[in-house]
Image (spheres, rainbow, N blue to C red):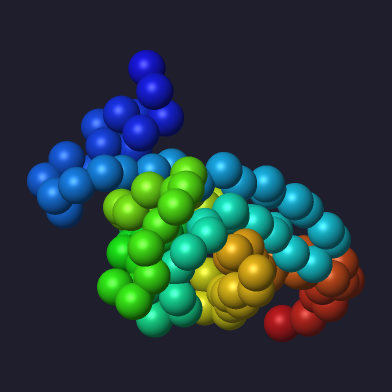
Length: 125
């Protein structure tokens, strides 16, 4: 099955047109999970990232070329980007941040810190 068809399968009925599953890298540091998604041709105001029921959803729409320009050769199609990621309990969903630069969307998801071990004092009653 083509990548376009896979994306459409998951998003049936949301939009008309072509669907893309952007390629992603998921990296882990001691402090963060980092998702880097290749999403060329989208302005920051054409993205939506949300978290609901432990699922991070990335949607976006690639806009048509400015009508002042005539494409001589075009390999990127117009359409919608869509990806979902299930988040574990080890992340802090309230502090997720995202940046966009040169066609790459980076989502930083902070890891929750393990509680420090501590000794529990026993009180005599």
